Image 1: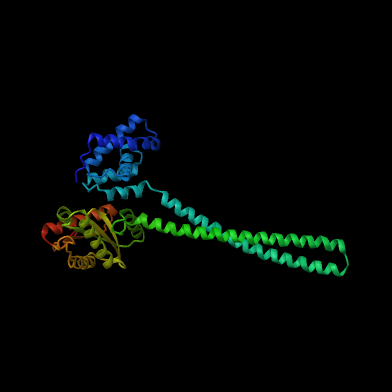
Image 2 (image 1 turned 60 degrees about the vertical axis):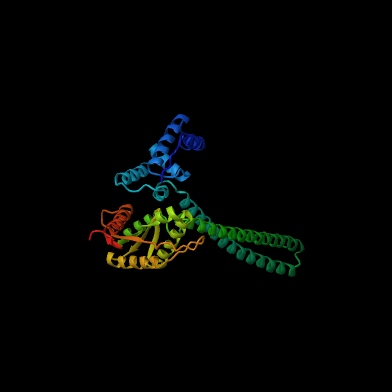
Length: 356
């Protein structure tokens, strides 16, 4: 894909973003414009669309304000890894976006506070009830001794206690309302988390979540395998039948991937036309069997054009399997699997296991 960023487009992007970045990075307008030019060159070089997220990550990169992000991106460039929007999104979530963790912590804290308040309210209510009963007993006893003045005072005290109890009950109602609001917020947070970790188009996991899960499994000393699934002829569908058909193909393949690994692994989208399945405690040979099941399911799919009834070609996949080694991180593991898929394609095979 060629961006062909014209001078007019660059000027427009400058107008839109420079003021924002001037505030975020405290750059002068001249420095912000200079960085923006570098951003546009980077986006065009890697055929990245000038989306706000791509822009923000690359602007941070050229500003050299996030050393870990710069190291990760420099490493990917040195390894000649494809720098696409999905990889840029992973960098954003890995090194820049902390809001989701903060929101989760806040809601958990609120939940804890509300729980404590509720328990305290229940305890206080029981204490007040006991106190009211004791005062009533006292009033009855004093009445028998005809101590009118004292009895009147205790009646007033009893009345105040009843008023306090009514106020407390109202407080409990407010607590209940707050708890209902918190439950609603928790549901919204769950939905936000789903959006945070899943690809909007396919419903598969995003790269940054697969990265986190890989680190978790490795921390538990689990063996990790990756299956790379590349749609060999996706560009053919897009070029000959349009972007809509391309999206249909992408989504149908994603559903097949989910179908076969929903219980045994984590399916994710790691490239424009590539999916990756992470599997724990499974050897490459077993992973290859799973990959073949996915391929068989996908290649059985048939499509007919709704416009003219033309039968569309079958979908062809290239599969690569790689096992995590001690020196691997998530990105290198996915890269090995991706290279294995490319090897399978070049050899005319349906799949290839890295290292064999």
